[in-house]
Length: 418
Image 1: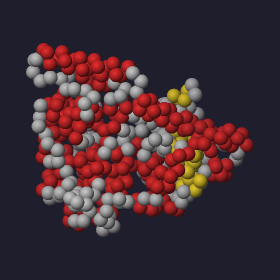
Image 2: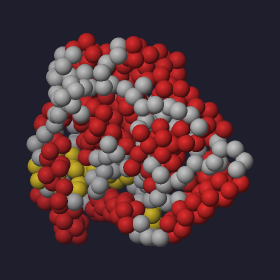
Image 3: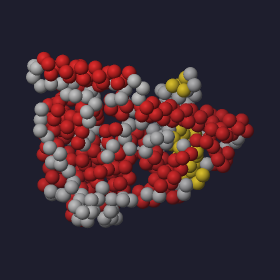
Image 4: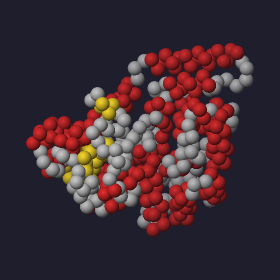
């Protein structure tokens, strides 16, 4: 098992390096929590509606499904199947409120016992089509207590442990959860307290990238398994087109953050770079070079933890107030960036704020506008959000840095979204 774990951790195509250690992953946790709070509010207020499409739940699940590899297809469990009339949380008001109660309990609780009790309660309702796939929502609320869930993870768990967990049953999920925690405890030095890591391992085994070590002492089976591991190692040495594209996306994201940092400094503002990005390499230095290390009190609203994760902020050097906020959305979910800027604008009133900017490739404008049109973002209409295309920033940033003054030049090359 140790050989498998060590090979898996070193494989750049594994979920460990390409998803679990992906720097953008952590940014999604608070925005997904915020989205689930909105789902609960709408259910309690009776405004959730009876359709998945366009709902606040679709917005959150879509954000989860955009996570790399492991959550691909996470939205399938929540899509309305008209012939089967499942999952039965859209047409049945009692079931909808039971689902909302599960989310609300898990949003507020902090112990394993409370989560398990909430799961038993929803299981007792026997809601058609609403099974352990909900664990993918709960994982983002309690990553150290609830593992992610999908078919590949179940298959991987069964292969590694010899268990016979079945899909679609909450009692099987709870049994698997217990086994996953025991496995994670045994190999924690190579995994993490965050159950996303062991979930990623099970996903890679269950999806066929790695085969499980043989049960027992069969020498021939062990030899065949080691040969299979060697095959994977040879694949690692080859160029992986999808991985290179993802890495290029991360690099471009950092590059655009650097452009915005430098432009803000040139225009006379203080600059802030997201706390989890400032150590990235950029132009022979670090992305956080020349930036402030702590947000002033004037720029620390309610929900400040989310604000610290905004990609780039420009602040007035005298007052310390935030003047502009930029979220760079190269390939990641636009949803999370919007939520962080909402926390900024609505958490403090942001009296000096002159612009919220979604900075994205030129071809993503339609996607940006589609996200903002979702009902979940109805409150953003008055916040003067702008779309700033890469192309306009690339062409004009040098001239703005040399001759520009204040926010007008940036507003001139951006496009109003609301």
